[in-house]
Length: 359
Image 1 (cartoon, rainbow, N blue to C red):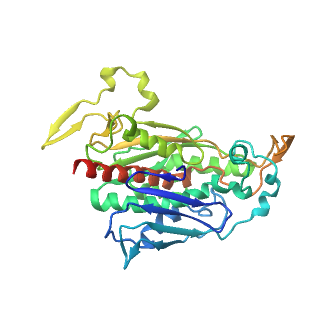
Image 2: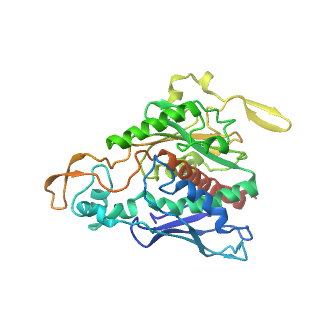
Image 3: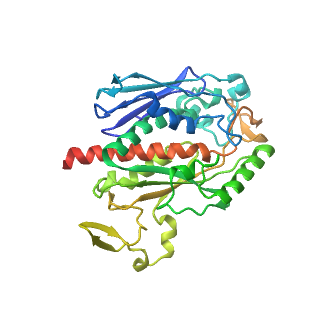
């Protein structure tokens, strides 16, 4: 169904922005994995609102509770249910949106499909839905780290026209978390922060690019044809709110190269195969080749702007609407843990599928 993701490691998220809470059910997690709320909370803290001056000021602790699937601090192999309460919902801020559709939001399309919508905060279309993904992704990251020695990272690569210089082979978690925009290039990060603060002051928004990577993925994960590893990564990233583009390896830039320039030539050393370049982004023929996987996700400017814009209401009458409520002037700092979570969910699912088929 549309609210579930994955095959062997399968998640189902639930909840609305201004309902009682949001959460996720994780099915297929291997048994006997050490797991408590303390393993999950750090990633939720990186995603939560109110964490800095450049994100939405909504005040939510986003404290996760494990409701099922563990006993004495270990997973049982049964479904794991995780829940986070909504504590700072203010539906009155959205009263005008009860009958009017916000431009470039999902208000109209949800109404066109279902004939009903949870208008406070966008309901299910709100980015608050991603809490469940991040919580499940924290479990996936733990499995990848402890069982397969795979590291998953993401960082802000670009905000509007400000582009960071980052070496994906050397970047580390500490560098990413060294500033509030989560860009490891400090001079670029300072410019990004100033731009986002300016957008907030003038009631506007900006978008940009998050770069994701996975190190230590062995050769052989993935599948041919329809379940190609890059295809699953693309679906995962384009399922994120505000995402508008995905490219892996050389991506669209590869069209400017010749085949001779673009080919990742193979060499062998110490009984292992490696490539001298990595334009493929670590995946060839839908299957990992043992090199680092890296890709980019484009996020649009946040749709809610504090300015009057044209729209229509539920009676299809032309009208205007000025954005209200608490919103991010740029999604990128909080999108970083989302990209990591979805990367981990794809990889752990393929790891389990590979093990099931190939041993």
